[in-house]
Image 1 (cartoon, rainbow, N blue to C red):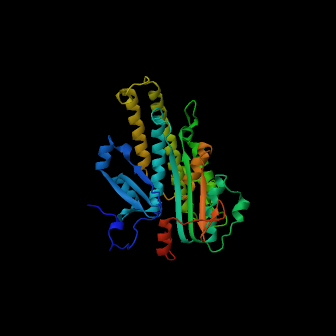
Image 2 (image 1 turned 180 degrees about the horizontal axis):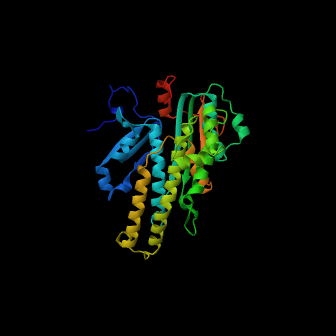
Image 3 (image 1 turned 90 degrees about the horizontal axis):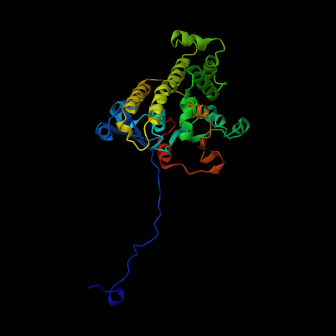
Length: 358
């Protein structure tokens, strides 16, 4: 029998367990890479591995081969942040191509490109260079960049991202989306060189040498093309620039042709028909899959962190809601000088990073 407290003369209230709760939310990015290498999602899951990037607090579910390219050797399930950035950008090209082909069935598919950098102790010149991306996407002017307080920046957190949708997917691969005219390799190479050059610091000695080569001031870029990448003796980093730009230009250019064929085959499938039963389309899709497989398995060097966002932004003509947020010394400096709360993962890194870079 249940009795009320009023009927229990000796009962005494010790504490009330009811109260006000506070809800805290934390967004975790989950990346799915390598699915197109498998005939079914079930096969992919059977052969997948999960790795975690402490810097961006993201979880990546991928095939074992890709996992080995982005994991730290000593800790197999921890992602190397720089390697993860490269693989994610490779996957952007593949995902955009597949989304374009499946346009009839995925009318509102979007891709978000992102770059997260945390450094406990960053120099003023390095911070200024990292923020040059904000200039390229039109978020800041040079005068605004120069006006930022950059003396002894500590606990620097830079979060850059942009969203690509259906309107941008076709522009990634075609100079004229209406006629499916692909970008020329030469035009893509020139665009990649220009965007990379804009991210470098002309006051830095090494960057100045790279700029000289990128701008082909002494014909050195042409010489690298002719020699298969032989960099000038005084600028060995130019080899990495050459590899990155040539890889990117070839990836976009070589994907466009099988993508065009797949789109043409898709257009010929009768409305309401099962596209998986159409031999012409499935053959074209296999050709596209093979092309994308080559794209994502080509090794390339360590590009500038903001370059994938910058070069894609320029290629698609903007309108990607690209933005950069930057916090240091406990204050959000970009885009507004308002106090910002450091994400939990950054707090954890700040507490344990000491004077080392993450």
